[in-house]
Image (cartoon, rainbow, N blue to C red):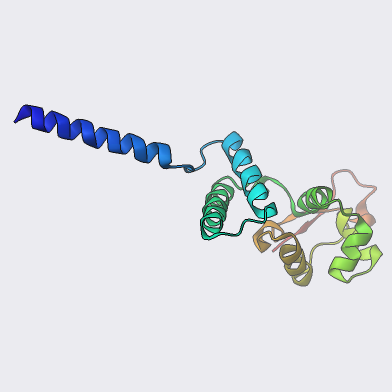
Length: 161
């Protein structure tokens, strides 16, 4: 009876090992793994193979990456203007490109990028849609520079919700 149980347990362990080897992706646990999965996803999206298996793999990687992003969101540490600068850099955009994207004047874009004017709800919506970032990332308080009091030390205006 014990030998039957031992064989059964060994068989179950062997099956679990085979299943673990077959599992290509796991929940992301490190930034290194996150970067690897992002590269894999880019390669899959760039490829021409759109078979069901490939589409399932794309969906799975997307879910794993989105989960990591949600749990490790670094936007909380960045004020909205810094975030805009970072996104512009990543997308190789200039201020003039933002004027076209937002449909506003160069002066307004300049004032926003130099902390002289806050972000309106419409601009937040457009930035969120264009960069595919949640509106909450742009809709946080940050300090504006008030040109009237700029000669005074440590003066600013808070752009509040």
